[in-house]
Length: 412
Ligand SMILES: *[C@@H]1O[C@H](CO)[C@@H](O)[C@H](O)[C@H]1NC(C)=O
Ligand SMILES: *[C@@H]1O[C@H](CO)[C@@H](O)[C@H](O)[C@H]1NC(C)=O
Ligand SMILES: *[C@@H]1O[C@H](CO)[C@@H](O)[C@H](O)[C@H]1NC(C)=O
Ligand SMILES: *[C@@H]1O[C@H](CO)[C@@H](O)[C@H](O)[C@H]1NC(C)=O
Ligand SMILES: *[C@@H]1O[C@H](CO)[C@@H](O)[C@H](O)[C@H]1NC(C)=O
Image (tube, rainbow, N blue to C red; front, side):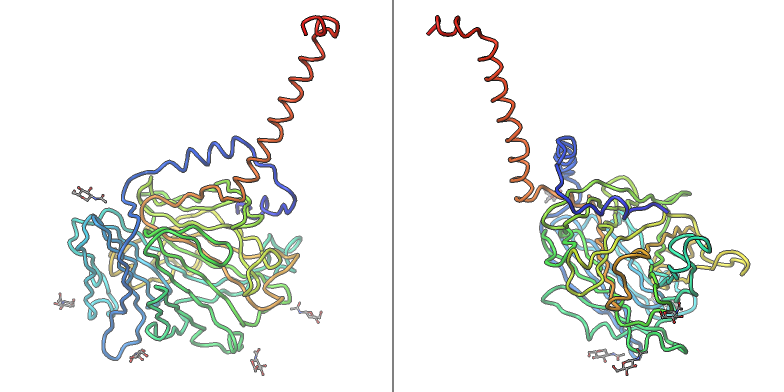
C-alpha cells in the first residue's frame, strides 16, 4: 500500500518552493494532441424493451474527434472509454448479444479503424474493514469484513436520474439480498457528470476538468457499518495494456484555495499521453458539506494483475465480470486491480455521519494540469517579492557599510 494520504495533512502555512513552481509551469505546457476546448456532449440512455435501463452513453463530439463513455450497471458498475479520430463515430449495440451469457461483440464503436484508444474501469467490490482490529491482529486498514460484490447489487433505472442540463446522471444501488439489513436505509451512488468545456467543480476537491473528461462522484450514504470503527474502500479493476499493469503516479500539487491542504494529485495513466487517465486528489469527505473538517485521507494500493475467470476457489476471489466490458473487448484475462481505502482508524470517519464521498476524473487525451490560482500567484508574489526586497536592502546596506564613511563623505 502506498500511503497517499500521509503527506497531505499539514494545515500550517505553506511556503511554496520555486522548484515546485517551475515544474508546475513546465508541465503545464500544452500537449496539443487530441484535446479539444469544447465539445458537443450528449447523454443518451439506449434501452431494450422489458429491461432495466442501465446503460448511459456519453458522446462528446469535437471538430476532429469523438469520445465515447459507456457507463453501465449491467453487472458491476463499469465504464468503457473510447477515443476516435472522427466526429462521426457511433456506438452500436446488439442487445440480444449484450444481454446473453456470452456478450462478446455486443458493443462496438464504429468505424472500428477510427479508434485511437480504449480502456475500461470496473468497480467490483465495496470493501469494509474493522480498523479497531488493526495493529497486532491485522495490518491497516484492519480486519476485512466480507466485501459487498457490486455485481450483486440492485441498481436504479438510470433514466429517472438523468439531468440533461448538468450533463449528469446517477446510478444508485443497494445489495439485492441484504439479510443483515445493513443497507436498509443506505445506498451506494455513482454520480456521473460530463462537461462540454473546461472548468472546475463547485464542491471540494474541485477537480479541474476539460471537455475531454467526465467526473465520477462515489457516495456511500446511510449504510450501517458492521463495526464501530469501520473503514470503507472500493476495489477497481481495469484492463492491463500488454503484460504489465498501469501504475499510479503521485504528482505534487499545491495547497491552494481549490483543494485546501491536499498536496497531491494521484493519477493512473494507461499509456504515455495522449491515451487515457484517471485522476483524483487523495481525499474523501465524511459530510455532504465537503470542507476541511470533513476531509479524510484516501490510500490507494498499487495495481496488480488479477485473473478474471476460472480461478480455483482456493486462490484469490475471481473478479466479477462486466458484460459491457466483455461485450466491447471480448473475453479478457488481462485485468489489473487496485483498491482505495477511505479514512483512517483515528480522527473523523464514516461513523460520524454515515456518509462518504470520493471524486475522480476520467479522461481521454492529456490529463488536465492545475495552473496556479490567483491566490497562489498573490502568495508567490509576496513570498518571492519580500525576500527580493530584503536582499536588495541588505546589498545596499553592505555597500554603504563597506564604503569608508570619510571616503563616502569626500565623494559627496
Ligand atoms: C425507466 O424510467 C423511464 C422514465 O421514468 C420510463 O419511461 C421507463 O419505462 C423506465 N424503465 C423501466 C424498465 O422501468
Ligand atoms: C481538424 O482537421 C483539419 C483537417 O485535417 C485541420 O485542418 C484542422 O486544423 C483540425 N482542427 C483541429 C481543431 O484540430
Ligand atoms: C446480434 O447478435 C445475434 C446473436 O449473436 C445475431 O444473431 C444477430 O444477427 C446480431 N444482430 C445484428 C444486427 O448484428
Ligand atoms: C432505517 O430508518 C428507519 C426510519 O428512519 C429507522 O426506524 C430504522 O431503524 C433504520 N434502520 C436501520 C437499519 O438503520
Ligand atoms: C461497539 O461499541 C459498543 C459500546 O462502546 C460495544 O459495546 C460494542 O461491543 C462495540 N462493537 C464492536 C463490534 O466492536
